[in-house]
Length: 114
Length: 116
Image (cartoon, rainbow over all chains, first blue to last red; front, side, top):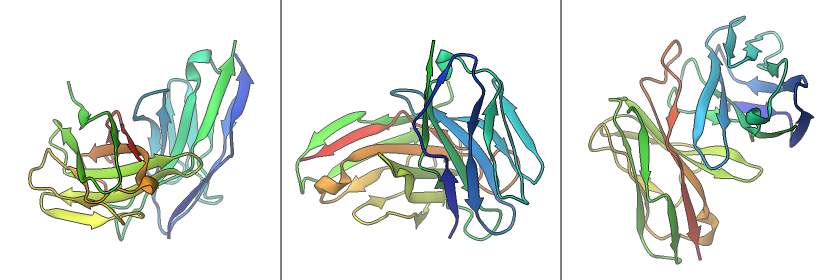
């Protein structure tokens, strides 16, 4: 079945540092790929998405590029802020077959220190 | 305001006492789903519904029931809760879950359930 593997956390960075959170997936065809963010005590919210190969999703300074050849969707941000401290989830939904299934990674906890 | 609401937000109960967690969305979304979040295991899908009266199992359906009699509501039922169902539960909805635009999910605030 489909799977999503995220870089293990927790990740601790200083403010203004560069962030990369790795995400690789296993799925047939061309799934849609997502990054969701969960702030403390809240539900998940969409951060960015990409629905086809070579698409780049971006939002709030975060970026991720859908790489079919490496089955990856790594999250990056050039300069993190304390307010970026949260749990980040990589996720996919399949492009065909059982479209109701949704697969999430284990989540990566990011802490940004002033 | 467009949102997904869940009730209750916190619940402590005892083994075997039936409970229902409600989920409602006001965005006229076709798709709804339930997840549980456990440390080190990420989000795991319990059940989902592609439309009214259409439900299907996710990855961890054992011990749970759902129904979708109206488009806006998707309650999660635990007929006989056990301690291993202690978890943080999220409901989500989406306009559609096929590929292309509009397939992201909108999540509720979560329900923290403790089964003693």
